[in-house]
Structures are given as C-alpha cells and as structure tokens.
Length: 412
Image 1 (cartoon, rainbow, N blue to C red):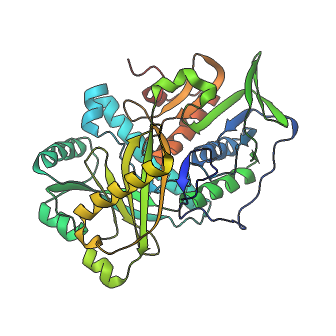
Image 2 (image 1 turned 30 degrees about the vertical axis):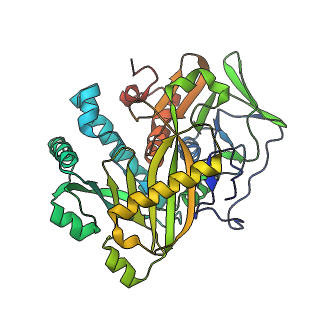
Image 3 (image 1 turned 90 degrees about the vertical axis):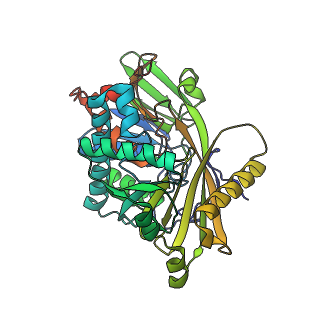
C-alpha cells in the first residue's frame, strides 16, 4: 500500500483523486510580499468554501495550501453530505438545552442546503446526487434508543419516518430492529467539489497559492503576517482551516481527539448482484460506536466506511490492514451476500473530534487576529459550509448569535 504524500492526512489512494489531473487549474507558489484583508490557511473543502464566501462578499482574500489543493483530508472523504450532526438531538438537548440543541440541528440542515445550492449555482460538476438516509439499529435496545431519538426529532420539526424491521430489510437488505429514514442528504465526488469551489472563488477574486506551506504566523500590531519559505502576506485576519490543531497551535491540541477513519470500495456490481444485495439508492449508517455507513457510487460500486479508531503509534500499514479487515468483517455480518465480492480500493483518513462532536468556529483569546474552523468530526462538508457563514459574520461584526454554539469555551 503506497503511502500518500499528504502529510499523514490520508493513507492509500482514494478513488476520487486522479493520479494526474490535467483538467484542474494549477495555482502558483507564493513568492514575494503581498497584501490581503484575510488569509486562509488550508486548501481543502473548508478553506475553499470560506474563500468563496469571503470573495463573493467583496473581501480581498488569499488562500495558502501547503501541498496541492483538495488532496488531503478532503480527498479521503467518503463524500456523504449529512444534515444530521454526529450527536443526536436527544444528546444535544441534554447537554445544551432544548433551544440550543434544536438550533444546532437547524443550522446543520441549513448548511447542507446552502452547500448544495452553492454547487448547483456555480454548476460544479462533482457527481452531486440527492439521497435519503436510513439510520438503523441492529439490536432491540439500540432500536429503543433510536426510537426515542425519532420522537424528539419529530417534536422539534425535523421530518422523518420510522421504519419497522420489515421495512428496513426491504429497503436495505439489512436485518435490523428499526430505523429512521430522512431526506435532505446527498453524495458527491469531494475532490471535484473542492476544485470547483476554488475555481468559483478565484473567479470572484480570491488569490490561491499551493505548494506554499505557512511556516510562521506573526502578529504585527493590528495586522498579522503569514510567511512561507519564499513569500509573505500581511493581512487583518488569518483563518486557520486545517481541520485540526497543527503543531503550530499546540496549546489547542488537548481540545481534540485524533481518529483515523476507513473506507472500502468494491468492484462494479452487476444488476443481478445489486438486486441480490438488496441495498437501494440510499445512504445507510448504524447506531454503533464506532459507526459504519454504506452507499453506492455513481458507477455501481459499493462504498463501505467507518470503523474509526483513535490515532496510536505503531506500524501504519499493519494497523491499516487490521482496521480494514475488521471493517469488511463488520459489513459482511450486516450484508452476508457480500461474500466473494472483491474490494478494489481502500484508504484511511485523519480527522479531529471534539468532546461534543461539534466544531470550533471563531476566535481564540490566545491568538489575536486569528479565526479558526477546526474539529468537524464526521460532518466535514456540512460544518465547512456553516463555518464559511459564521466566519464571515465575525469579519463583518454582524453576529447572529449562532456563533456562540460553536465557540471555544462552550465546554466546561
């Protein structure tokens, strides 16, 4: 298994990432001294959406990517756009109260709709397809908890249906104890989405630089300087959109738990094989911890993901082999007809998780002139879209109050 060059953000070769992409725009290295209002550090889908949002609002923005844009954690994504946060509405209500829990869910749903609208408005070709989600429980105890979640979602105004074991089996081929079915999700090619959003941002005036890792970020009075090996940008603000606290922000590292997540992709399945498997055109995921999810690709391959594990020291390839083997075994128990279906691709990605599975979006008192968008958990693209809106509010000073739900310091 060939290791990626993306600084440990992924391992293996995701199916989204072409070995040589002749179609995408190539962006220059940063050379010399420049000025901007806002500098964004990070060229994945989060940085791309922030750049587009700021540039469209007329802000002079520059984006720095240390390697090539879209080729890190974004390329390792399983490309699910889910409006439901990792934490159910019951859990968030218990932690933050009913009004805050409901608002977090509303914001997540709104962010997905805005992201999908952005992709369609800019005619970004990324295989975007709307999908329903089936969130299922295997055993009766888990189904009872899921049923309580369903009741609270309905009470909060989020449309969904309850599936009996018979309905779950008919729709998915999975023998379980019950499930919630909901609309509003989607799937896509994450690399193509990121590249398309960056193209739109550049057209709106954003300057994009790749192969330009930030080596130093230095406050200078009421400004900030972001330096690379061959250049620098002086700006009013820097937005750190690297997904997790890099070594440069070591004091923040304790706020995150780092995990590796795994993805398997089968060969293309025939109509007969797909019918035998029983899984319809849905996104399915279970209530287990760590959870598992599955969906079809546009060319009729089955994508299986999950089995997240905390980052530990050890031989990377051996840990990868063990984790993907366990993931395959888990899915074989759920879908026994996978027997003799070969896996053609496998990879892992790195992500950061916070104690409440919600991102940190906004300023931090230790870092003047900084804004952060970190710790997206399993909803990277959803929270990327939300971060773009909230960070623009910080920039303009026209705060809606929603930013308080994702600020540093919310957890005591």
